[in-house]
Image (cartoon, rainbow, N blue to C red; front, side, top):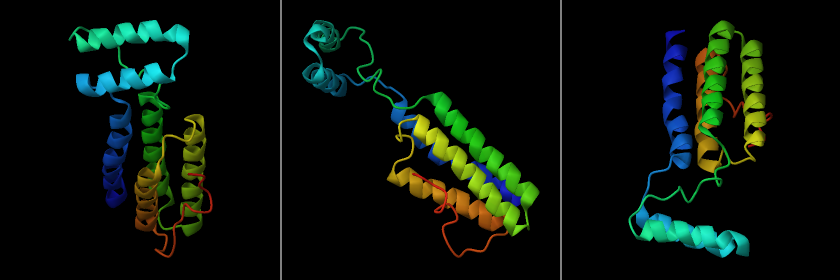
Amino acid sequence: MDRLKNHKETKTGLLEDMLSFIRYTPNREADILAFIEKYQKSENEERPAILENLRQCMDGKEYPNPYAGGYHYTPEDVSLMEKILDEYIDDLILAEGDPAAISECVKDAVLKINALNEECGRHLIDTWRRERLCSFINSAAETAGLTHEKDHTLQHRMW
């Protein structure tokens, strides 16, 4: 049981990666390029405001986040992922030693993650995160008592 409780801590890196992608840290050089790209892709009526923001950025004045509105998920979505993973570990603790119950825990967690990822336009879980997430889920399931013979998430996941 303690090994499973400690397993909760291993999700931190995965969640931090999700958050780092949507956290904004001003960087004038990168932001100038972002405003230029935004300008190129925008409709004519949106361009004057983008040019004004670009000018503010170039002049070292305060300017809005050039990436705002471009994120596909929110910190709340990452918090929900954390809750799903914590509940998964809690459920495994109750199912420990019962392979059928452990398999059900895996299925339940993966289906919840499928739904969350779908709500985020399938942008929450990329290839790298998928590998880390599968490793987290499988490792916890094996610690709880499933044999290490396969990817236990594969038959249920859509990411």
